[in-house]
Image (cartoon, rainbow, N blue to C red; front, side, top):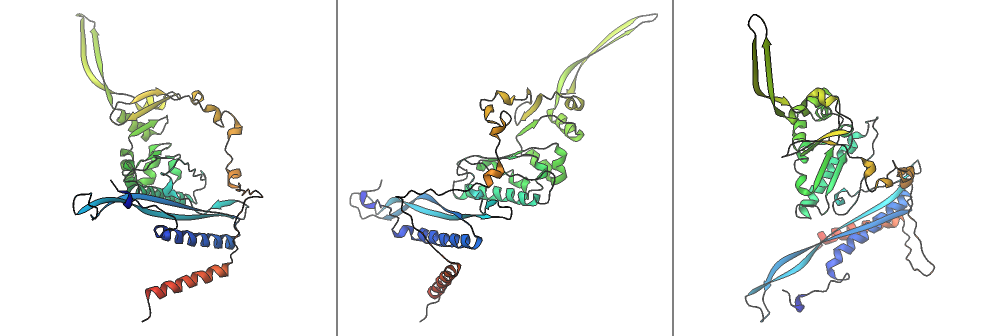
Length: 358
């Protein structure tokens, strides 16, 4: 327990935040310079402060506390400054130059990655983005959140085969689970996974605890699912009746194994049915969920086309700064030359500090 004399009042003007203010000023100057250079009219700067309480032992000068040393707890701060500007492209659209993928697990958010399903020219960019996303989230979970992200990050990879090969995905999918990250791989058939990942496809499938089969006709997929479902024990009766000069009658009884669902049964499975396999339990043969019975179905575009999300309109959106007549604000005017001159002066001062003259 800390005494009042050891409770330090944190003041933003104190030396504790001096490095933070320096970084904020530097990022702000760079952002304004970039806005002038790129002819941008919008920009924003964000700062994130992580606070960790650490324990230290100091000499005991308090006569009311026994021992030569005593324990105190004090905060340690770690900050990150980032800036984002919007620039216009040739088609009069706009885009942000920073995604902050490492922050996906710190707050409730959604990221939509839309690619062409006919042109695979830039699929490698999406594959690199997924690889970076997994690595950044794992690093942040370990370095900041003690191994687990505050919010579970669920990645839905629809048409996973169109993304291309994600580097080291077979190793990533085995390690992300403990960091509150999961991936749902959606394929037309399992042969697509083998085509892209070769021998690593078995490792990827082995690390998936849940398998949902909605139907299909691809032979290798049907074979693997039929084998995975296993067999059931059935009673087999054989009867024989021989008629001749002397009539004989016989009956044979035995137990044998039969596939729970054969390949031909899977191929003609009703479109309203599905098979769900969970690790550690027997498979479920169930009806598909009727989306129209969901309590929020009326918010979907399937119910009303007016609910459809217009991506292009969202990308063209411009934030408007609304000021009242009584509201005061500061106006800063910078030029590219002045920013460059200031940066050169800062570099010279840094060199002078590192190499002082005697």
